[in-house]
Length: 614
Image (tube, rainbow, N blue to C red; front, side):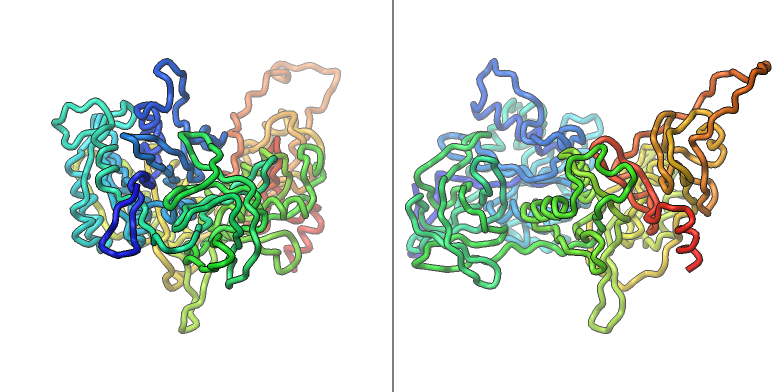
């Protein structure tokens, strides 16, 4: 099972391989894992299996993205391969960092047509910082616009740019079609299975290394919760063996020790959990009965309390205020509206996500949630509303800092856009107005161009919708945090105001039709409204109080044309992302399980006027 190394005490567990699959969003990680499952014999030949098995959450399946890192295991040639499928979106970088703390190597998956994108750089930098072994996998070689060899050289250039050593530059490369379950050492090979990839994982990724004389140690890298077992800690056994009977302690932050009584030890067998009596070094285990444990803690024996280095994650760059709803409709659509319920739910989210921080607002009005980006916030909002919560959120704000000279600094992002050449002018002009700095402009004369910008994070809040409008829906934009730089100056604000309902009631087609020349409406006939609720976007800069409940005056006289049917402009349903990008500082998004509404912080019209004068 083990093999002696050069050191007298260090050995490797050759029966296990722990790997993470890292890539930019939508490059095919989860689909590749599906094929690994099928070819490893996890399913019967005639068994019906859904696509993207690892994307188990409803939101993940609907959006086609991975939000949280998932663990699974496949058996290949008698060796257990623990696979961690990681998110590809930069806002969920905390999930990637947790996953990398449990593995010895990564499969860097890159689209054969798109090549390395911003998140590819982000996750690769994290893997290099941890000195993990790397396998390059050029995926989707079946695409008509595939350029596999060129993409491979782009990955090597990226490795050089990130300061990789010679060993990493000589890492193996595999070409694959993840959907069909095909992997090749070269494009000319006639392989029809994933055997080249799996064999490379076994031969190139080392088994977990540990000190044979060290006592039991486990770093908590993730948390889960079960209604039957309570909180569960997930982590890799760094050294020693674990048994239910062992007397354990938890080493928390600042060395605080707490006793731990593990009630059950589970490991992954395929997609399912299996209870075991003992865990060996290198195993990724799930421990039940650990109610007081948080991510980053070390579980060890009481006789040898030794702390492992805590998981280090990048600091949050965006903050948002969550408050209790004081809407006239409060409690009509949601089950959980109390402040304590909302706070407990946010704290539960922070326990599972080390990239989140929850604080009580300094003025006592709600809670401040700090995270990686507005998309991460939108996912939290969508998850909570599906669970029955009703609350309000404010506009996202970037988190500014002060440098050693007392000057204001702000988070800066590296932005890569891929657009048709005809739209490069308007996109470049807009980003320059938003304090962006062009870094590179690539035109391969195929009709599309790639432009790279350095731009403040606050400039991208609310920009995605405008970007899609400017590029007629054909543009692609990706970004990642590139550190803090001196403040680049004020940005132009939203140039449109809001159409605000001036009374309560139900919207009427006649009233909405009369407001359409004023701007873009968010409501349809029959929608209930209240005073202070935002029913549309005004064409002009100032807010306008309107009456969408106005109905046609009835009379006993009939005239030609008076009874014509009213045809209204269709309304696009509001999503958390679109709502967050729309509101201004004096506005809120009201979240309920059934609706997403925009509203003013101060609802009564008279009080808003007084506040505006002050």
